[in-house]
Length: 176
Image (cartoon, rainbow, N blue to C red; front, side, top):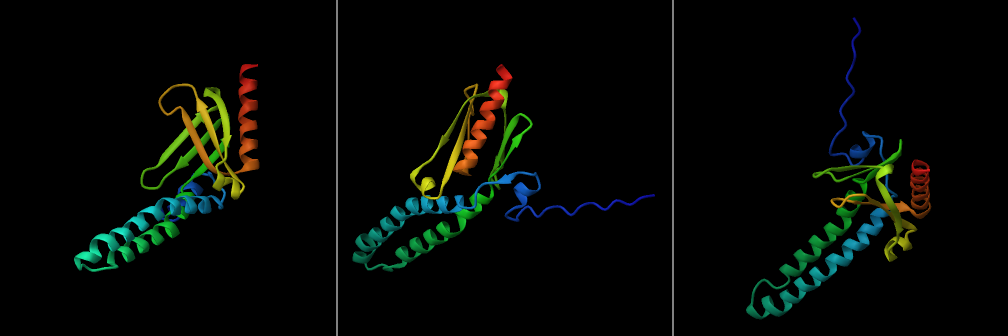
C-alpha cells in the first residue's frame, strides 16, 4: 500500500498565498507605490481637517489639545505605509486558454473569468501616477450590462499593450 502525504496547505494569511496557490501572475510591484500615493492624496485632507478641528474647536474649549492631531496623523501614516502594499499583493491575473482571469481581494475575494468570445472592446488606460511609474491598467468591456467591465490595474505598460493585442487577435480569429 502506498502512502500519500498531503501537501501542506498554504497559509491563507501569507501575502503571496492567494495568487501563488492558484497559478496567477502578480501585478507589477511598482503598483504598490501607485496605491501608496493615491492613498496619501486621500488621507492628507482628513489629517489636515483633524488638525484644524483640533486647533479651532478643541483648543479654545480647553480640551486635550493635540491628541486628535497626533491620532489622525499616526493613523494616516499607518494606513499609507501598510495598506497599499497589501492591496497590491492581493491582485493576480492569468491570460490563456481563450480567457482572462482576474482575481483580487483577501477578505472578500473576487475571481472573474472573461472568455475572449464575450469581449466587445479593450482599453489600455494610464493616469498621471501610473504614467510616472510606467504602469497602465487594462479595461476589458464585455457584452452584457451587469459587471460588463473588468479592470486589471498595475500592469507594466508594455505588458498591458501586449495583453490587449493578444485578446484582440483572439477576437479577430473567433469571428473570421
